[in-house]
Length: 473
Image (tube, rainbow, N blue to C red; front, side):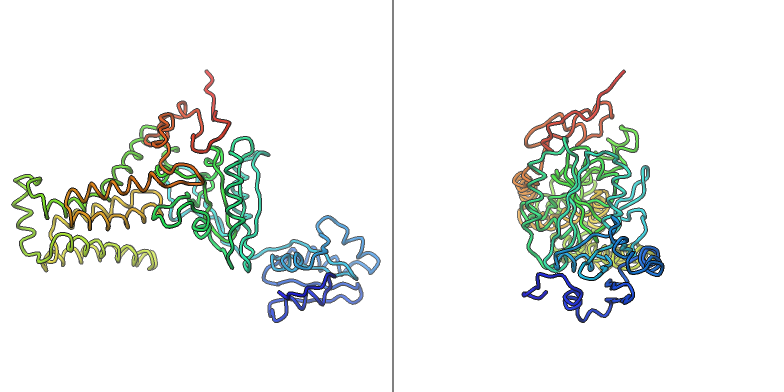
């Protein structure tokens, strides 16, 4: 924008600011002393006809002033705000020396569908879309409370992206709300178009491989986080919402845990933690045992393993890294290709490459089983961001075991635990409720206890209103 902006808001100034915008529409009504300025692709054509064209075709000049006094027409005085309003999909109505904005924006948007990354068997299947207004309506529909507060910020020097901060008054800790808002206000960037970008700007430790904010596409998850006392951020043009603060163990929870019987939910949650151990250690344990610790292998299996590795010319660590990289290539190829082709590539590629690698003597049968088990276990983790982080860590653990054997495995796990212990999310411990120790919260972390036992909100939220429900007989 021009540096020397005139103080007076005029039609010529607006047209000058939006010069060389081929999609800008300027319509004049000389008999009504009125002009319209808008972007045609950003307004709803039906509303434009009903609210502007039809009334303007019926009224006379003396009636224009009275029509513009209606509540839907907002009088503007600041040129910069007026330009942003037009860019946001409003119609600017100029009449004599006054300007009004009418919000009839109606850009094309994706319809509400189910989430492809957070699928559930039971429970709701609707998911967020790229429109923040639609996402807010999905939340309001589930949480009909006047205590749900929404604050709006504009982020990006060029994009002016709307970022909304949501919390429940008298439940959320206001210090956390102010902390999150302060971090958002400090962001200085040209554009922001996704919640994933926002988390990288406001994380406590941006160099960590672990996600420090939980992202979700599900409105029901957002509502449960709000009710628990957490703070939510929604970015316009992004289908994901951000929940803060987040705990490491929170990434292993799924909405399915709460929509099914508590015993089944508990079993599934424990299975996910078992999958975490398998995906980090299984391939690394193979490298450690076959390189340094043959005495750990049962005698009945030792002969089979020796025959399997007899033709392999590489050390176990090279063999494992080669197969892990191939699995990641297949995974990435399957994700980028169209759905049907991607599934075919993943299945056929895995079978063909694995079988061919064994026959060619590049790897052993046992390693194929270990790598496949680790890959399958990583898919059990509900959060894609956490699953990707753990897959990356797995390579480091494999290298350590290839150098120091079981000592390297212990060292790798110790480094992970030490790193997790030092992480924070919005100023709170990342491994709550283990450190600091909060045994009461374990009922909804390592297990999914019956709802009758889940009477208090998580201590990580620092809420003053701890009581979540009361059981009445």
